[in-house]
Amino acid sequence: MTHLSVEKNGPVTTVRFTRPEKKNALDLAMYEAWAAAFEEAATDDAVRVVVLTGSAGIFTAGNDIGDFMRNPPTGESSPVFRVLTAVRTFPKPIVAAVDGPAIGIGTTILLHCDLVIATESARFQLPFVNLALVPEAASSVLLPSLVGMHRAAEWLMLGEAFDARAALVAGLVNRVVTADALEPTAQDLAARLAQKPKEALRLTKKLLRGPTSAQVEQTMRDESALFLERLASAEAMEAFMAFASRKSK
Ligand code: COA
Image 1 (tube, helix red, strand yellow):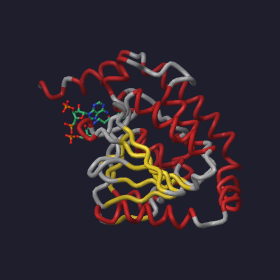
Image 2 (cartoon, helix red, strand yellow):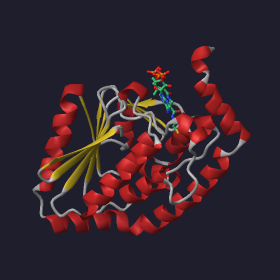
Image 3 (tube, helix red, strand yellow):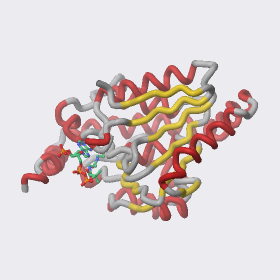
């Protein structure tokens, strides 16, 4: 069973993480399904907008830490890299809707979305350094350009969680709404975007992302190479084991 659903509703496709019992931690099958959903939506003329969301109380706890040990990514053909490429190059608007924790890729993927709606209980965290890893998804360049160098350094180096208010002030999210309003707000924004002239919207996204796209692509590659090295390090293995054994302590 794949813990990711793809719901098509007219011009809006909703991609939803559905593994709440594991805090929507992303395993290989979920990455594969996520990449396939975006690759298909990119070329399907009927799809005008994609909504990316999680479950009530949890967006995603990021990469499945067990999978970091069992099935680590090996390079650009790995499902996680396919996801990053598919989302980075997605030509249509993406609206993200975040409730609860959005950890690791749960936060970095937002840098590639166009509109981000969060609830008051959304929590963001970039714990790469804590896990002896490095930033991914081109966050080392996109984050400082969005929120400023010092805030990006704090979030990426201390790796502590920050709340929806901080994310709003920093410009990482567009709006903070109540939990009940999350899905309706995201769907309403998606429906409004879906009514815009399609080609004008595509060109606007291209103009917004175009000037930095080569740098973003190269940074993603450079980060990935370092990330793979770090995954094989003794200090990363120690951090993963500490997470795996934390409940038995
Ligand atoms: N990978 C694998 N399993 C994960 C996971 C992850 N990233 N995040 C949560 N889970 C699992 C837990 O192991 C637990 O499984 P179990 O019930 O079989 O023991 C279950 O999801 C519930 O998680 P739990 O930690 O008990 O919930 P919580 O509400 O106390 O905390 C989080 C939620 C998301 C804050 C916490 O789980 C967490 O910090 N996860 C790790 C985040 C992370 O570092 N991700 C890597 C990013 S690169």
